[in-house]
Amino acid sequence: MTRTVIPGAGAPGAQNSIRDYSLGDAPDDAAASEGLDDELAAEDAGGAPRARGDEAPRSVQVPDELAGERLDKVLAKVFPEFSRSRLQGWIEEQRVRVDGKPAKVRQPVPLGATIELVPDLLPEQLAFAPEPVPLDIVYEDDAIVVINKPAGLVVHPAAGNWSGTLLNGLLHRYGDAAGLPRAGIVHRLDKDTSGLMVVARTLEAQTDLVRQLQARTVKRRYLALVWGNMADEGTIDAPIGRDPRERTRMAVVKGASGKPARTHFRRIDKTLWHNQPVSAIHCDLETGRTHQIRVHCAHIGHPLLGDPVYGHARGKRSVAALPDGFARQALHAWRLGLVHPVTGRAMQWRAEVPDDLDALIEALGFGGKEDEDEAGFDEDMFDSAYTDEGYVIGSDEEDHEDDDEDDEQDEDKHA
Image 1 (cartoon, rainbow, N blue to C red):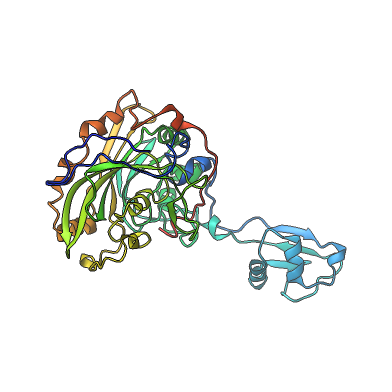
Image 2 (spheres, rainbow, N blue to C red):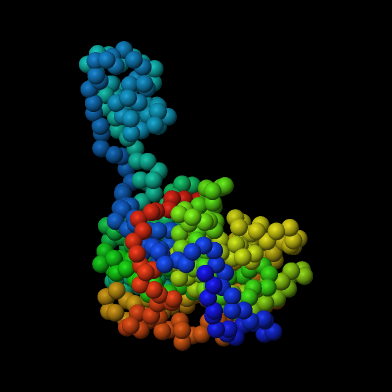
């Protein structure tokens, strides 16, 4: 789909562009859940936290046909929900008793024996535990919390990151979060993306924020640094799904496996670094796919600086190492707006560019942080998102149809 956009004020001397980047059919079948990063909407009723400790003991009488077999083999048959290696570990930890006595892996099980197993919690269960993770609270009341997430902090426990996450910190700071799905989390930022997130403190607020994300009345603006001379402004309209060649990555894909994704951008500054052009852009998300900005920018030949996953998409051009060893994607969620789920007030927040990104901006020779507010998107357009009328960027009624397909939840591990 190609649409015409009204050219606006970009970087001094930049060319104007009225071309949107598209792939595939017009996205009239956008999912109702697409406003939630990583399709959390489909899971907003799950993921209740659990406390540390052991599970309740399990007891079973051994069937006669298994009498005489080795204990580890018997356990695998009577407790098929656990892996054999885990069961063997529990035997060694003396969590298994046969007729009330500590057991050994290779011992035969007598006829009519009773086996008692005391499992410990699995890593994914232990993940939902309070931990004193520092949180930079921008705003909080009885219904919502707005957090400025630092780069390096994982939002939600996943394989490879079962502890030390933002969720663990929420459980530590807010005891009531233990009763909420995902401790109140309704959207995510990648591990190495910094910036603003909203978290619910009540189930009613969480439900309302989910609906706002679905209706696209939650507005999120990002600052990104990308390779190349980006166009003045435009819309990247390309479906995103799992990369068929590497399932730990996302990619622009055709067909049913891709979900509609739109990113609106405007260039706000440009510079040269070792004879390579670099652009500073603002991005507004219309959808919330996994790694959306990173994938979209790489797809059109302008990957984010420092992106360890998608950065190689800039091709064979030789690029010097970034100043001060900057090695994360240069992406910051610097502005957030929503309608308060209790008061109905339009609210918005800004988060200053973090020190590492600020230093990179200066070292690369951009005009300075002052330009980020001055040369960005039309402020009236952003602010109008928080009127009682519920302004929505590019909204069509057809964009809110249901879509029950979920993405896998391993992006934090591979962020």
